[in-house]
Length: 478
Image (cartoon, rainbow, N blue to C red):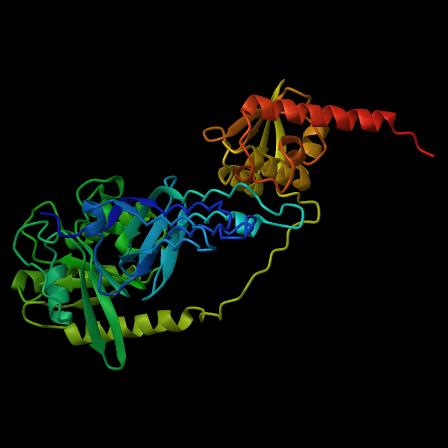
C-alpha cells in the first residue's frame, strides 16, 4: 500500500457566487416600497497552506477532486446571501505548485505560507444595490460569477540542508540512523529505501536536517529505477554527500566508478553544479573496506573532494563528519540573502489602456476580450430584457461600441464576448445610445402593472423609437 506520494495532479474548483435577488418591498399602505433585493454571497476559495505536521501528498493522491462551497443567493428585505466557506488544503513544507504546462505558480516554504489555488466567484448584486436616481426600481439583479476551476500539479521537494546520495545499499540509511534519531528501514538488499528519510542532526550550536535520497542508479535522470522520482528532493539542499560503499560484493563496481556514475546523473538532472560535495567512504570497519578506502582516498582528494572514512555500524568517524557538515551548512545559511520586508508593488495602468480589446476574426465576426466585459456577460440574465439593456449600457459606457465602429463593424455583424470555448455571440446593432432606453424605460417594474405579451412590448418599443426619430427629424434650430 502506498504511504508516501510526492507528486499529484489536483483538480480544484472554487465556489460559485450566489445570485442577487430582484425584489420589491411589500407592505400594507405602501404599494411602491422600492427595491429591497439583497446581494449574493461570495464563493469560497481553494487555499493551499503549509502545515508542518503534513509530510506527504497521499491524501490528494486518493482524493484528487476538491471543491469549495458556493455562496448563497440574496433574499428580499435587503438580506445578503452567506459567503461560501474557503477550502483549506494543508500541504507539506517545500511543496511546489505548477500548472498543466509545468510553469511554477508558487513555491511554498515555511509554516503557514499560503497560496490561493482557485478564487471564488463574486456574488451578484441585488436590485437594491443597482437602484439609482435614473433607475429607481430595477426589475432585475446580477447573477453570481462562477468560481475558478482547473488542474494544478503539486510536487514535494524536501526541505533539507544535507542530501545523502549514492548507490542502493551503500549505507545511506544506516548513516542517517546513527547521525540522527531517524529510524529508516535497513536491510541487506537493494532498494530498501523507497521514500526519502529525514533526520535532524545537532553538531555544536548548529542544527541541520539530513535527507536520505533513495534509488540512484545509472540512467536515473532518464527515469530508470526510482531515482527520477526523488532527485527533486536534493534541489533545496546546501551540500551533497556521496556515500560510497568500500566493501561492495559486486565485482563490476568500485567506489570511484560509483562516484562518477552518480555525478553524471546529477549533471544530467541539472541545477546542482554549485552545491559543495563531500565524499564519505563507508564500511571501513571491514578490513577489505579499510584497505580500499586508504587506496582511493588520495585520488579523490586530488579531485578536490573532502573525504571522510566512516563506519555506521562501528560509529567510526561520525563526529568529524557531523561537524564538517555543520560548518558547510552554517556558511551556506550565512551566504543566503536576508528576507526583506514585504513590499507593495504598485503598477498603474497605462493611460491608453481601455481594459478590453476588439479584434476582427473574419469578415463578419469581431471578438471582444477583457476582464470587465467578460465578467459583465457572466453576470447577465439574458432572459430579462432590462438586464440585457443594463449590459448594453455598461458596454457602451466602457467604449466597446465605439471601438467596434473603429474596427469596421457594421450592423448585423457578429460580436463575440469572451474566449472561443465560452463566448456570448450576438448580432450587433449600432445605436450609440443607452441600451436600456431601447429595451424599456428605466425604473419600470413590470410586476407593478399588468403584464403585456412579448409581441406587444416589442410593438410599443418600436413605436417609441419611431416617434423619437420623427421628433429628431422635425427639429429645426433657431
